[in-house]
Length: 324
Image 1 (cartoon, one colour):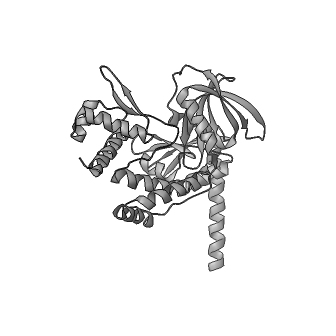
Image 2 (cartoon, one colour):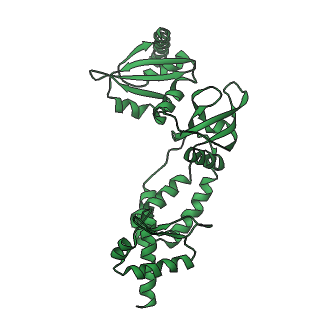
Image 3 (tube, one colour):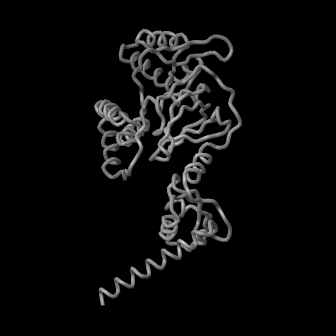
């Protein structure tokens, strides 16, 4: 057995260990076409190189690649390398503070070692894609990691929170899940002091500290649905409900999830629920949909729509007179 063949086999073993959480010695031996004794020797070679490979004995035992004191090199197949490179390009313009620079550094490292055939595919995708970036709320990466770990470990978190009226207070919560709309990040959590489920915008959070207080997971609503209902209704002065004569998927394509939610209805209609600070803005928003719309509530919205119609008619008349 040559040194090159041994090295290639050890690299294949590493790739297998990175592919799934656990392997038995027999499974690895079958994949590599060697004996279990050879697998044990190759595992030891990986340990010498600094890879933390753990072994468990007995029924159901096997080998598992663990986390070490430093991040070891990763072996990626062609599809994984392409997906990672494209994701890093997208992340370079993301909403997490500091992530853009880190993504570009990682992308430069990956691009340096990527085979030319794969590099060409990645650049072809990137060259034919544009990203439409609107105003976003930047999030500190450390805050994101703190909340993610708290969700995973089921521990309470304390943080300061800025309210919409400019005030600030300390909150203690039991975090469940983070939800992102692309423009903003939200945390769904059980508010300990208010004894209820709440949605928190991450860009309004101050320093977050994970406590050592573990909590038992509660039965909770679907995080995505809960956050969407919160961000489209609770923060606004007015909440409008209107029937739209269009398939729900077409209306969802026009209305971002942080602006409104679309509910299925009957006979070709759907129901749009959208919040706003003014009735005039809501009337204009519904008029822009280019579909037949029936206002369900509030009744004052119909009056605002009538006022908007009269203003538009006057504007159109004035324009016609100037062009005559």
